[in-house]
Image 1 (cartoon, rainbow, N blue to C red):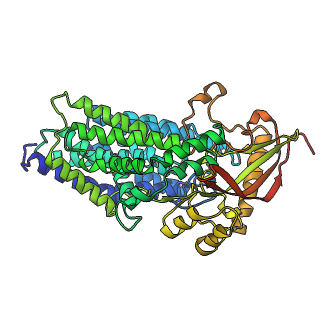
Image 2: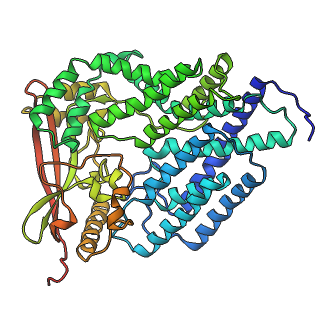
Image 3: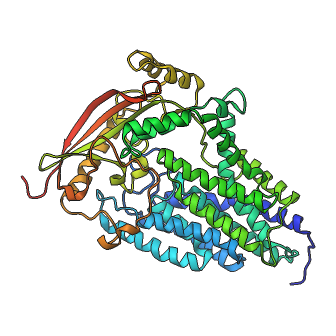
Length: 541
């Protein structure tokens, strides 16, 4: 078709980005979410007993409705989509591959029938491999992963959004080509601005949320006790193989460097605003973000490995295309377009990253589980055992079992300065914490949810005792299981493994701990037995 609409590169890029965001916000993302819910996913980020992972096979009618909608959109993508080529185009492909790896290798939910779960894995495997070869099928793969394997979670959001954004861009680019709009001189520039903005906006949003916590934008940087995140993560179950005395020394060193650490965090998170000044700024922003994720993992057990790998691929692709005849054209207008996209994200007009801004405190409260085996040994049941619900059980899935009000997020974070100050000043032997809980806390205790929880744990552990397989991988290939995102795999007791024998009883405990910076130790305020549940052991009446 002859060219009918001459546009300069900046004009074409602006048009493509605007249409891509509109398509993402008002069509593609809502369709993926709607279809995933139809297939059985919990509505993210809703709190549910088992998170986003489904509890039964999909209903045929709902599956047909979802399948028809996503098939229509995929057909449109196959018909008019102009899938980009080159190294930058590998970024959404790798992002989809990471999501597939993570959720295909999750454990089965042994408390449920394995039949439909095996069918789900097979369907996702076939569709996922096809989508890696034919990107027009990417949305179908995402819908199945989110709807049937619990993929609609915070740690996978960057990868999922990159795939959706790339699909939208291919539709827009194909439509504009069909209309005869002038092809861009540098197609990699538009793709880099889009993918880079999707990735980096998650960090800019985190900085924005921190800047809004205190009286001034710099209050978080100067006042937050980031060292306490290490303390509460240790209490929660991260790196408990490190002796407590050594961990306390590390926290003491970090305490003296908190302003420096906080300042570096804000710098890295805000660097995305200037990422498109030149290649070095871009690499600083992306490599800084993935390095930040590595440090977060080491200090708190929160492992955003998908972001780390995707960031590395994005940085490598940007360097690779710089030596081609279609390099990324950095400069004024890419910066303007990227900042405009970030502003739309902050305003809630595009994708919506999680708000990751809080004040760290020394107080942590959680429900934890122990098990007793048939030979009388006692072990800790940590969140790695709870896969595919490991994320929920590492956070707040069991809060409804506790009779006490909760005043912090899972790792001791709060958004209210008054709660922060009260907890930091609290004496471990006084009434400060109880007063803070009474004034600001929220109770989640729920008899119905408690009953569901008890029944679920009984069914799960009874199934394990009877020999129900938990991993979809053969024993020799279980090292291929993707890493988890919440590494709270340790505690006071040795970790339970299936090789330790059958479980005869599971016990729920409610625990509160306060880290004393002055005494350099963790003080246990409460260790309350909630209930225990007898578990049937195979071969025993």
